[in-house]
Image (cartoon, rainbow, N blue to C red; front, side):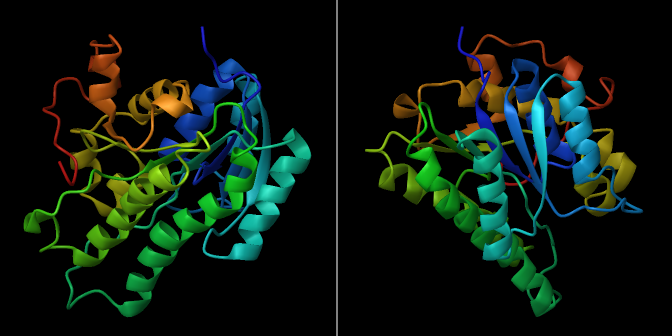
Length: 273
């Protein structure tokens, strides 16, 4: 059976939420994890730090290093890549999970918030991919996985929060382009997106609070779906826009109630679906 044992994962936004859940799932196999995130000190409204995530990953039986990194800045990402390669000898998998969110309409969004969306979501994803690619080319089964939605040009996804949609679709376009660009090298580049809202700090703080959390799933569903993707042969699985629920069902995992925050509450559909 294929596992992630001995593989090195470079995961952005891995101090909490979906990124951390993916790290913990890989840790069960004994993967090496670079926890790439900004939170150095405890935040009043956000759980965990880079250091607590590293501790949790090690407790799960894996190796991990803290990489305090703001992915908007090339020198910081390069430092994190260098530290990962020095510690673990290479990079097998890149998870572009870090993302900024702002659902303001065009006239309401300040330009500094607009810039943050594009600097983190689009530029950060492109930058991390660019700097990890030389090492992914040397890996046995290299994968890039972006937490990004399927591309859909229906105007309803643009009219209310144009800036955010453009920024998330920028991450999706990286999948579209890089999967073709690096197909000959055998580097898989795929996207993964949740069918429902996921109970993360973003949902709790920005997308409806506890009432939305009740109608959400736990981050573990995305982590389990990512695990299945990352174990697929990279030359046979690229350019896909996966939905978490669908890939689990396609792999024979049909009991999904365990992922619900509140099994008695009807699940909402996530954005872009």
